[in-house]
Length: 350
Image (tube, rainbow, N blue to C red; front, side, top):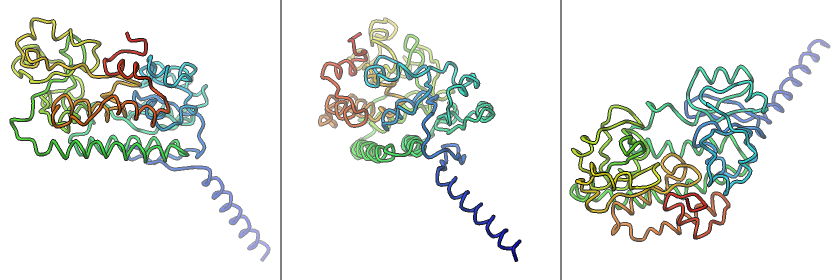
């Protein structure tokens, strides 16, 4: 009988201990469908994917970051979130120095779906939460794109916990309201009202955001025909000027260029309808490039307004930027800096 009660006691103790341990942990199902168990009160996280720092900033938890990707650090992130200057920059985050990451005491990392690198992180006690995929795993439809944007924020918020969960709800509400508003107007456009759009990324305008890239779906939601939707490569591809001439876009957006002059001042582009009709637009930039961050909800509104100015004359980009930066970054942005963002400049106006 004593053995029986002893066994029961041990069992009860094990259950209680297990419950206490579990109470201090949380399980996150990441975007690769992996179940990842992390401490509920994680205080040391790595923002290794390009968009992850901006999302953590938007969710109000940057004090937990112990390492960031190089792309997270720019003049806007430095002014809106000054503590980024004190966070170590992790070079080559897709093939990181795991000993360096271990020395930072990191508990988990927001990461890509790269099994080999995930295993290396695991070997030094760092768990990976997948929030991004290699370029060949991009969303394939508008519906998938919308879901992915919300899922990435959701998983990030679930991992961070605390107030991030409430900020996620607020961001979702804003995101849904803008997407729904724009789709409700563009869904009724006639074929002849849908302009052909080319979105240049870099390198003399010949590197474009190609098929299944975020800009493709932003343009399509905003009521445009995305000319590079059938390119061979996903996300980034190189096209020839001859191909662009054959497309003869009605509108051209420049995503990560400092000026539209690379196109408008180039004689090779001069015969295009977009150039002749002064419809070459420089996309704004901010904490992260608007095309691949949570700020793409601002870019969606900008694109919609440029493509269909009469349909979206009620969109005031200055008010939207001010609201977004005040609400989601906790930063009271000046009118001067709003102008800088809209003109793809840094806070100094350069």
